[in-house]
Image (cartoon, protein in one colour):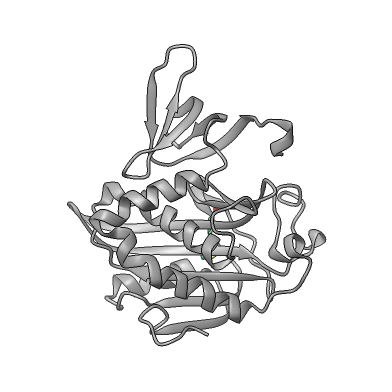
Length: 260
Ligand code: BTN
């Protein structure tokens, strides 16, 4: 399903593994080629963002990690999540439209519920990214009752959204081929602008009142735009002052009823 491209060569498949992300990070550290792909049917210790665990039951989802050696500076690392999120939208053939949307910085949502999470871990030396691993977890064939209770009201799956089971191998091919197809352009000098513009267009946050929390700070206001490096710009409606944040967790304070 992967075709002849470089992404997916080599491919490491596990029926069960602790985390495809840890395996891929280890391979990357030992010098594996760009495009190395790690896929599992089940993860026992799937890693989410901000130290959370990622529910990765057997036979249910797409759990993959892709090793990259991108020619961008560490401060532009946020572009990788935007690029990966857009590749997922394209692979699902939503055209960035209303069916699935991006929630900055790393989520793909359907009907305000999380379909897919993206985790980017990068190792830089000075101003050079030595490697980055893009981990993608997509809920595919879950029914509502397959999610643990802590995420049951916020998660969704392709099956719940489309009403049918998907072939995960076909989906894997579509997602990875789309990533490969757009990768070089996305990170070229010209391509970066359109990645940011497309991610902004596909975002559920723009114009919304939000609070973004990171490990070190918290920022509230109206989500206004994405900057060229993928940072989110939030404007304080009382003072008009702009704040920028590179990553964090977003809470939507007020979502208009028709958009829920
Ligand atoms: C998030 O918190 O939203 C990001 C979740 C990323 C999960 C994927 S599943 C494949 C890869 N391996 C992991 O351990 N995590 C990522």
